[in-house]
Length: 200
Image (cartoon, rainbow, N blue to C red; front, top):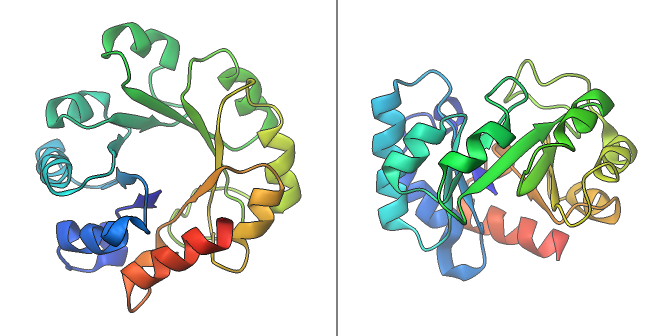
């Protein structure tokens, strides 16, 4: 999963850069629209543009309403967002609802919610989310991943690189979510392919 971030993209066209990250079917398998300080209209416009431009699922961070309006595949929610069990009856069948989990307490709370996947982190130090909390490391990630309900995929997030991504897979991750590892690279397409290869 590659996550958009206006601060890291620094004015580059997000649609074109996401095309590069997905390119050739060997890159990102899902794109998350995350524009923390943007107006809902701006998030909606980008989500719609990406849905129309990409062959992979697009999900929206925090905003289920924006995701639905954009025709996106789903939404990614934090612990402070409306609980997934309340949201699930109001979204279409097949609409993805992902959940952030960063501690045993959050894992325990999240076990009762019908999430399609857990995003566990921060796994490693990251500059892209100042309030992310203390890094879990691969072992800490693995302990939380084991708390996910049976059959719920778990991905690692936070400071993920080509070098450390395999440690998360060995600890139970089915994939990873990244910002800097792709958007700070000179060639986003090559960076995403390298990540895919590292976790294969």
